Length: 171
Image (cartoon, rainbow, N blue to C red; front, top):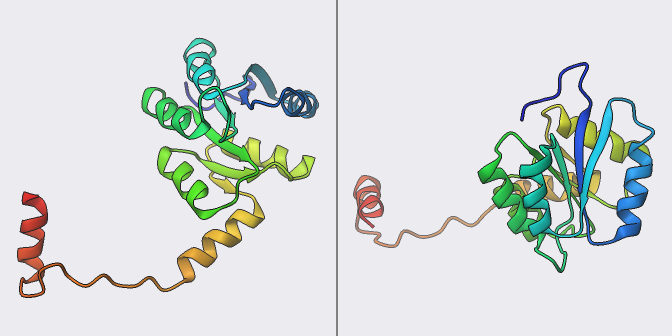
């Protein structure tokens, strides 16, 4: 799977355990030229299976679902299908969720309370290879990276940096 060509629509898979949210997102995306929703899943396990079957370009992934959580699904999908881009669409804006999703391979992270225009822009951006975050998430990330981090004291202060590196490699 690669980025869609100019004549091929952007193929999307919607993954969320709330049928009404999936229906609303599908209705919104039906109005966007060059986009095709090719499937829906109610959980992470189903999403992993469908990605292999239908080959979407982008997966819109909720994080917490009863039938296979989204974070595990993001990890599995990015490991098996590295060309598939994943946009997390969730209500969770805590640092742990954001950074865990990014470490797992998500290309973007947006909150479900975005308006139609912002959501559409985020989906298209991820579909075309960009990374994107909703404004609230971007603010949290900036604050996190602007906060001075405590420098841990060396485990063996008597060792040089080079010796500590050798020890770390041996471990």
